[in-house]
Length: 246
Image (tube, rainbow, N blue to C red):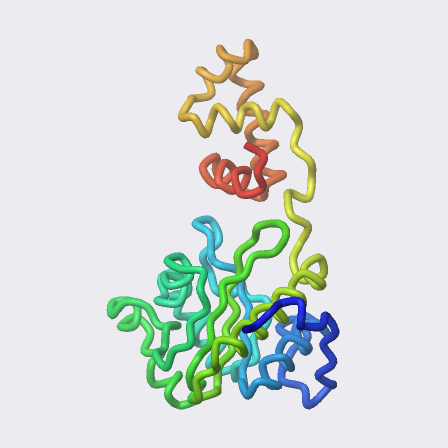
């Protein structure tokens, strides 16, 4: 029986050949080490991305590392079907690892009709995929996909890969993603205005509740939107919830 305590935290897979065309898509040495983890188990390709949110659904906005051929990656980014893909749907339905021969990167038939990606995936032959749903200590959810191996890994190998990937993620999360939260701290009043806005209150109603002018409420909300890099109140509320400010 597999026991996590049997696994060492040291991952020495060697440098090997570079698998990324750009440093931005390799996440530096950390990314190369994660890809080397997959290669050590017979997987030719590695992809790590955040699970998309409503205010950030794009593949390029969530992609952290990818060893796909550039042509395939760029075409997938342009197709804009990541958020509606079978892969994301599966991740939202279950946290269990999945090994599959099916191409879950594609979406519904309507989405595929907008951008014929299936032939491109067949051309580059990524092969079967081993899919993991991972969370870091900030509760950010990721999808990790090792692909390019045809024989099915057993439960012990899957467990070893998952634990090793989690160890690497925990060690490198601070360098991989921006600091969890807005770049500029929100004031107590800004958070209060956002909280009432999330409850469906208008600026005038918030002004009455907080005993301030509606002009001041609008000013607080605009400041909060700027700090959260949001284009409207709804997006600001969504990001504040994600950052656990509300």
